[in-house]
Image (cartoon, rainbow, N blue to C red; front, side):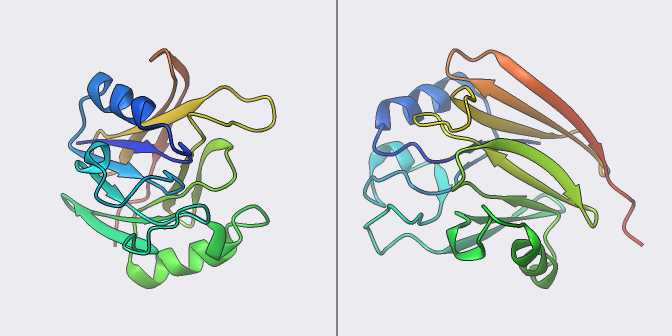
Length: 170
């Protein structure tokens, strides 16, 4: 199963459409700050949440999606103070039984394993920070315990890949 993850596109519907057309995915996620209307046609195939810059109140603050036997929690991150720490978000992930957590807000791409939960921030396709390139992410659930995370630039080049092996559920 492949997940496509974008965030912080700040009004650029064309870049969302470009990525959606470039990448095959079983489930698509937008982690907020699209700055588009909730029912904008480019977001129609995406699970989506509200970011701190989204004015449309129809966006939910969080989304929980079961992708096969994996539970995905998606938030923007501003309500969990992800720029300071992932602790609050980690607690929320544990509360809902998430295997994967998707978030944005910081405009910094990265992935890490915390307490056997995969946390992925796809970065930003319009306004990356810290000298980073414009990025989005794909997550391939390669097996019940192995996840491959790819960070991809706007030219569709993979700039970073990571393999995470989870402990088997007991």
